[in-house]
Image (cartoon, rainbow, N blue to C red; front, top):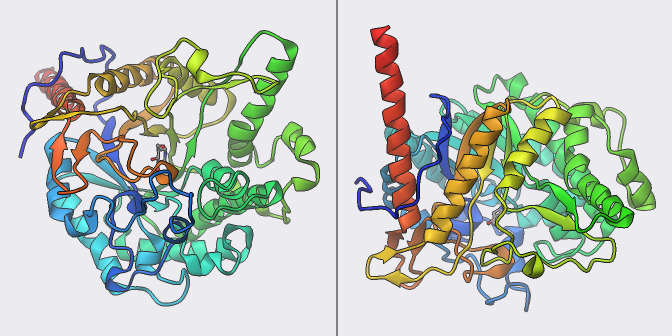
Length: 461
Ligand code: IFM
């Protein structure tokens, strides 16, 4: 299958990208798989959280989602039709190890074997995320990420996955967006497991970072052949006004969102201004933790959707900023991506960087077999151009991945928000590539043609 219908007339970014630049699409296990208790899978904290009244906007859950567990071949063909180099997916920990320790589940492992083999057979590089939020409920019952023992359970899980799949995985990231798991899961409580404690959130953040570092060390000691890294959700934080108070607030927000993760990973320390601000809610740190967290990475992923704006009195609202918004109410601000990447390269000794997620939720209308999502297409084109701008300024960019392949379960928003470049009809499970998918496929064909031309030039030289 090839996606060769006419895409919308959205111009391709004009920047040039290196021949080995990795283009991809991304998903996560809980958001697409369904089959929550099939073939020996254990419950995850998101299975539990969805049962809480009021937790999910449309009272939905992940029981069916995109039914990807049963439609693997079809979805692999869809990924291949896009012409991407890589597919970023996550493993559901409770599917492969139902209790989060001890017994492995052969049928769960088999699913990911088929996924990885299916990708390789189609010439697509597997990019595996170990933790995209669906922690085994059995571990949560023992304290979850607030409990230091979970750090060691995670390392064992990482080693187990490497033993089974490591010979075929191009890249492994430990955690997807630790800030989200820590703050939304344990401080505001709007995500699983729904706790509301700032001290717990900071301890969780520390345990996630520590488990990342220890897992990298253990994987390398085991001889892992995959490139190893982590994925952070980051934004530039701008003050709402020029007032000193808004500037101070922006600096603090930058500390909580970006420096709280980047400083330990690259400088083996937490930022002092944030520690001062947290006071007694700062995490318990043991000797050797910070050095472990700063274990060097082979690459790093950044998920970018929008900028952040800070006002000291909390009065700033995206709706009044004048910038266009996505259906999530997030400002469309591609410039923020290049600014962020340039700043990271300037302030930290970063390894090669990927944009591991970027995309937008928009209100799509299915018209026959087309979805004319020009807004999403323009969003993606503008952000790819921003990556090109960062490259031109010397940032070591190696890849870009669209979030997401499919419309899927958007966590507390349920199914109402659609991020896919492929439309999913949740009644029939029919997949329809949107115009953005057609555009991305055409853009990737143009990239490949440029690579081929460069190859001819080299041969002819
Ligand atoms: O859907 C999520 C994804 O799971 C993590 N990053 C942000 C996306 C959009 O909210």
